Length: 343
Ligand code: F6P
Image (cartoon, rainbow, N blue to C red; front, side, top):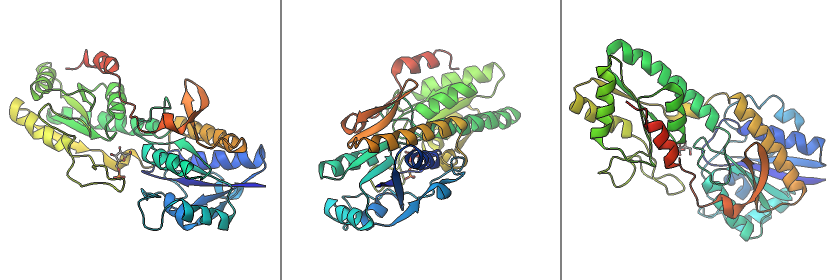
């Protein structure tokens, strides 16, 4: 019987457990497959730390947030004990024929390198940011948007009561998808994304026109947004384990600037990890389950070096090269369409 190992790597994301369940159920029902789950991302792969995954372990988990396997940003090449030879030894020791890596761009880049070094590996795209080029949507994004939309709805009522301008900062790294979708869904008066700079004058113009209509302005800002005078996205928290700046804090920069310039009391809220926690939406459970089933089919066909992806309503297979190194950003026409009704 073929035996495969699943790992979840990078930031966690609602829907990961649905992928794990979908893979195990498809593998044990349709194919003659067995699975183990590596603990804490690539760490478990490097050290051969794995748990058996059978039907009983994955029962009822698709509605749970997080990942039952744990995750980390442990790099299989950057850590002293990493590297393909150690991984091959670990795979042999626990009797695993191939690896399923569930992760974002950093994970897919590492998986692509491992493939080049002779590790049989496939991918499943995951991120709340929805910024992976090779797939129309990633699971986790829909849940994050629902949470951010509810946050805007809630901020609106307190903003209205105090006649304040409310600024909500959402995640997304260098892509503005969460801000765009939540902002449009909740009718924000301005949506600020990394893909398009907006001047403070313009932002304040929108804010003042809302106030002049007797309403409380609501601004949604993506963590990667930059004012024209900024050279890079705001980061005060150092680098992450993949050596990327940890973004955040632009909302707290904008709020006092808006207040100073408009005279309107302004408050900032950073939504943060709330966007990644808790139960996945129905949509994310379905996409995660479909990805899981598709990746079981993929390893049955020994489709090493491919990632499952959503194109339209179809699940397809794409080569790793298509999936790594490109950030899927919000198209400017799409932003301009939303921008036409700001203020
Ligand atoms: O990629 C998902 C994400 O939540 C980003 O939106 C955010 O910038 C980053 O991860 C935060 O990462 P960490 O979990 O390392 O703080």
